[in-house]
Length: 186
Image (cartoon, rainbow, N blue to C red):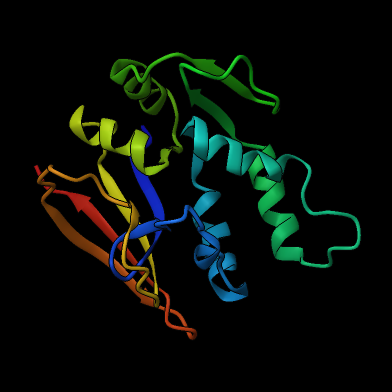
């Protein structure tokens, strides 16, 4: 049975996008990207909200011709080889392979995905994750904390919810990003 995890990159003050919606500060350097790739190999299904899906679907055709990053090509292969469930009431259709669209987050469906797979289910996007936390779905939280404070924007973690966490793993990268993996305490 795969775990249900929430993984996100955030500023040191807890935002995944700044007040203007920019999230360029979350782009990983080569060292972090290699680490992310290794983590993503354990994912059997991504569950995305509309905005995260629209951001991530670029990986369906990346890297561009002329890009020489083996790390980016590796991530693109991982992305294309992973099932995706998009939760959106506004999208008419999805344009990527191995992807299906549902209109609302059904906790039982997510639990069934995890129970049927030896690989993890990864919830992507802070808005959808807030719903998943409320539904008691999230078993593990993976945070990539980048060394910048942006002062406001889209919170990475749900507001108004208490989520007790137990630290399981930490890693510091050369440029200052810190990876933190927590188990959600019962």
